[in-house]
Image (cartoon, rainbow, N blue to C red; front, side):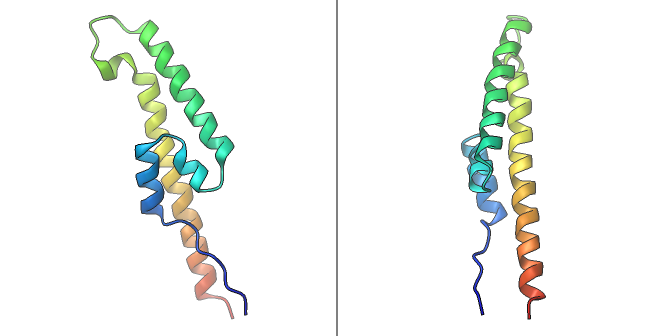
Length: 95
């Protein structure tokens, strides 16, 4: 009988992704995906500051980065949840 390690719990991945963008993908085992999200957060945040009017709010001036940040933690949680459910299913149906 072999024991398999469980994947990280989705709630922990979500918490890490909320605290540090890209870290959720790293915990899920996709560090390059995390770097891509981080790169686009910085890039679109910078572009937004150049496009938005000066009287826009702080979030408004960085809306491109905020949008990608939102996508990054949703992606990290979704990947962790899929991995968790696959692991649970395999644990229930192994012989």
